[in-house]
Amino acid sequence: MKPEHSVASSSLAQGELLKSLCARALGTAGLALILGVVPGGIARAQTAPVSVPDKSFPESLTSTKDGTIYVGSFNLGGVVKAAPGGKAEQFIKPGTAGSRSVLGVLADEKNNTLYVCSNDITGFGVPGPSDTKGAWLKTFDLASGAPKGSFPLKDPKSLCNDIAVGGDGTAYVTDSFTPNVYSLKPGGTALDIWATDPMLAPAKDGVGLDGIAVGADGNLYVTTYIPAALFKIAVKDGKAGTVTALKTSRPLDHADAMRAFGDSFLLIEGAGRLDKVTIKGDEAQIETIKDGLAEPVSVTQVGNTGWVAEGKLSYIIGDNKEKDPGPFTIKPVALSK
Image 1 (cartoon, rainbow, N blue to C red):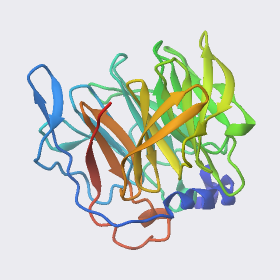
Image 2: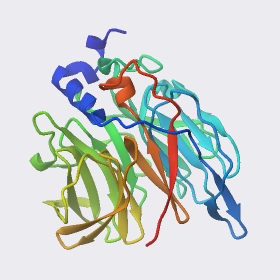
Image 3: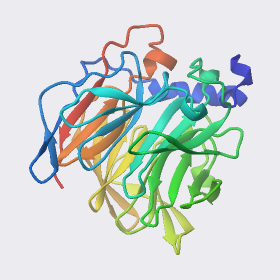
Image 4: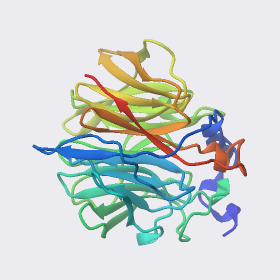
C-alpha cells in the first residue's frame, strides 16, 4: 500500500513530527529480560536472558502480577510475552484481528483483557502487517490471546498511543495527533471522546498526547511528547473535569510513557531517563531513577524492578534509518518507593 493512502500520512507534517521521536539515538546492548517467582507469587529479578525477535523495535510493554511481560512491536506488529523464567513467545500474531503496527499495550488482569493500540503508519515508511487503515484500540483475551474487540479512533488524523484503565474498568486512550483522550466503558461498543482541551493539542512542530496513567487520587494524568509537559485531568463521577498543566520541578525532555507507581508515577523521558514523579497539588516533583538509557520508550513494574524498553526507533524512522540497530534491550532498574 502506498504511503499516501494511509491515514497516518494524511498530514505530511505530522509524519515529520513522529520522526522527531527518535532524534536522540544512543547505541545499545543485548536484550536481557529475566524474571522469576519466589514463594508467595512475588516476582523478582533473575539472570538468565530471554530472547525476543530480532529487529522488532519495541514501542510499549506491560506486565501482570506474576511477572509475565508483554511487548508490542512498532514495525512487525503483534505482541510477544515472556513468562517468569521462560523464553519469549509469540502471543498475538502480527496482523491478528486486522492489527498493524503496535504502540501502547496494557494488561488489565481484573477484566482479563490485553489492550493494544494498533496504527497504520505506512506514511512513515513502516507498512506493518495487514492493510487496515486508521488508528484502533484492539482488545484481546489476556489468557488466550483471542481477539475480543476492535474500536476505531474517530479522527482521521489519529494516532493511538497508550492506554490506562480506571477502577471501574473504563479504558482511557491517548491520541497523539489530536487533543482528545478517548474512553471505552466496560461492555462499550465504541470509543467516546472523554476529554479534549486546546492545551492537549499537538504544537506546531511538536507531538501531542503520549503517556497516560490513573493516579492514586482517582484523577487522570497525561504527558505530551514535544514540547514535553505533564497534565492532570480531574475526574468526577467518571466525567472529565478541569485540565491543569502541572509545574514540574525541572524541565522534562520528550515525556513519554507513564505508569502508576504507588502514590506516584514512573515516567519515561525519551532523552534517556526513567523518573519517579510525585504530585503535590499542581506541582510535580521529578526524581531521576536511571539516566543514560538508549532511546527508552516504555516502562512496566514487576515487584521492585522497573523494566524499561529501549526502542531505538531512530533506526527505523529517524536519522539512523538503514543502519543496524543491533540487539534491543529491556533493562531492569531497581525501584524504591
